[in-house]
Image (spheres, rainbow, N blue to C red):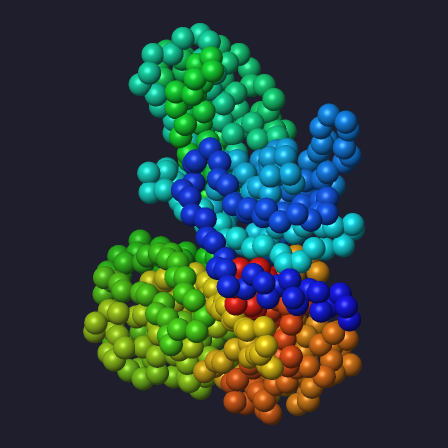
Length: 509
């Protein structure tokens, strides 16, 4: 009880401050997450964490011992996340000066997130904790290269107009990799210190030092090659050029056998000169969960006879019948229940040639690959593939120190199956807790973690009402973290929502 009282007191001292946000553009040499604390404490260890990463440790600074002449320190990384290996540092005299700021080299977009600084005194966490958000923005001047997996090669551009001598070194690196060297061009010699992931797959032009063209050719790009690459041109100790290239390797659209068969039939019809044009196009749509509707676009220039049938179906991750338009009417008799009363097409789509489908209340489960097929007598006239991704909405809820309860919101207009299971869980760093479970029409208190028993509440019949909000009674600083609510049915997650709980002010867990 004394420890809890001490924690609450120390936290209240600092709740008036606001958590800072640090914003930088990708490509800078380094960024500093600031933290100044001049109070005299017996803190011997400082640890920087990042929410949501596993392992969560970004950097650890530790006071070892004191000699007659100076304090000795070391930077230890017992379980450091390898994503940050060799990229973090703190001042050697951080504990003496109170400057606990963390320096992160070559920040890139994937480093964006919330970081936490924790001080440890005599093996016990010293409260309050300090939190700072890092936002790494992608510069519009950076090059972005997109290719499909399986192509023979891809080229990452890097050209210099400087006069380059024989002592020039050109190094291609990948941010976040350890070792980071992808390719090194040194006086026309073979690559050195190369990450084995790229062994035998990289090359630069033979006369690069003469032409100034240091573009990197990467053979057989893979999905795992996606990332941020930098081209560094050095002349002795001077950096003459630094370019950033973002590589995105994606899967080729994979069509089911039925679609390939339809395409073959269409080609045969075209050869037979029936006057129809057969095309297959692919597009992507990204939307946030919680919007009222999303449109899967399909406008065509193909001549459409009046007696064709338009069918929207979903082929991945699970096959479903979404919408059917036939004989001038919307035929929804064979529509899957999941899409019942959620789909709509424009009036007279065959005349307007706008076959787009409007999907109401898109949710997490709607993410997937959709196919619109226009056919007549089982022969396809034209088709369109649309990849839909519904991003899970995330909310931030702030609560005061003396609040008796707080509500983690989750409301949806979608129809929720009555036999689904609702699970609220909390995640902090590498730990997780089961907060609340609703199943078979009742709360399952036996599945809760002890720290949340008798402290949570949901409304009656939440699935029927579409309100899965969770009320947390007597919230404390121990409850701070990321909460996720999932709606599961037959082992599949069909809805998902994320809420982050924090206390007002800067210092929170």
